[in-house]
Amino acid sequence: MNEAQQAIETMRGRFDQQIMATEGVVSVGTGLSEDGQPCLVIGTSGPVDAVRARLPQEIFDVCVEIRHVGDIEAQ
Image 1 (tube, rainbow, N blue to C red):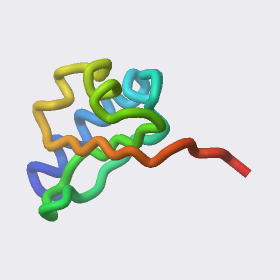
Image 2 (image 1 turned 120 degrees about the horizontal axis):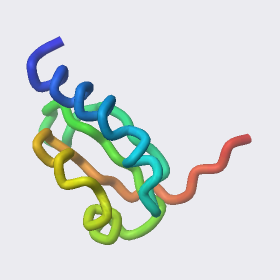
Image 3 (image 1 turned 90 degrees about the horizontal axis):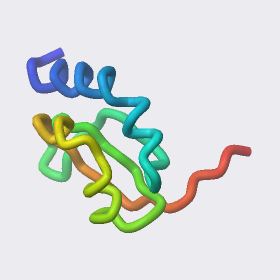
Image 4 (image 1 turned 180 degrees about the horizontal axis):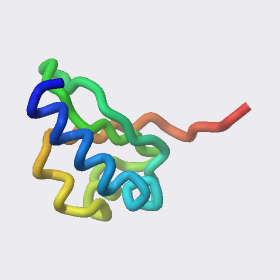
């Protein structure tokens, strides 16, 4: 695991519960950004900008991609 991936995993460990408790967040994970870099990927059910404003600002010390994925329902 490279340094960027480690930083993302550390950030996710610190803030996973707080991110998931944020209104409009339906998923959080690690993945690749659109340009292929490791990043924290946050899925939303609502507008990305509204969710971004409610997230802890510390998470943006690493690469973060927020994507509208819609509602997720367990079956």
